[in-house]
Image: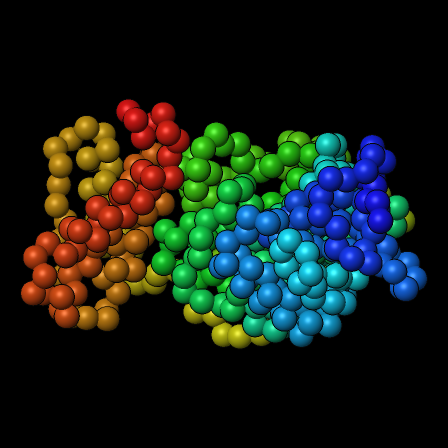
Length: 396
């Protein structure tokens, strides 16, 4: 059996999986190579996700976990698996074909407002279904999405990093343009459904404007953008964009999870409202965002209340030091559990905005017998941040 490349129609040199003819090589997602195939004895086409021969055992395990997760989901916008294959050079999975191409390959120019709203609404609804199963995607970006531009449909075709809600950020991926502030591991906040909604905001921004909301050249700068920089205003990129849609994008891109949408369902409802207004009239009157945004769990607010004088003292001390004055030490004392850590973390954004490093180490009463443990924690954090930098800057 000969495999044909969709672009050149020349025979492939890749190993053959018996009974499966590759019609089109769609490209690589975050977790696998994606093909459109024809299966012997089956009508129509399907998708084949396959790991390469050099995949490590951990990646293969993650691939099988992804297949089990897909099999457990019945969510529009997330294609279901049809078979798990093991007779090739690496694990492979056959899934339903929702048609289209990887979204990343179609983003050379901005989309129409209508198309962006349709795709954004479907993607928000698919995320809502995933979140209902207590799973967070953690790697939402165009590389993992399949879009059919002919009828404005979009599907999530890679869930290789999906995981339950948890306190840890997980590993940083090679593409940091779409990660949430929580995923940087520097906010002390769990990675939950609202993290995916931030990534959705980045995608929606790009669909509408043809560019990303931030510009960065290395990992450290990307992390700084997500933690501290304001996005480039999208109205300046798309002058005809209604203010209501710009406000939805801004709400999705809020630094604090508590200021974002709390559910994919709420985002989908607002985008559907915009679409219903925009299609017949080419305008969207202002409306109250999030009227149907009901979280499926109780979320403790991120804001710190009742500590305004102490926060002002910290900010004043930082301002003095940052202006070139002598170094200072500010001591924060009090009983365990009264919020000392939360108070100190209020300084984080101001330090990051100035291009500084924010390091923390805690004096834990259970580790009082370990010398300098809090300083060790702080400087471990510094080393981790420095290792995110480029090779040239590390050399310096």
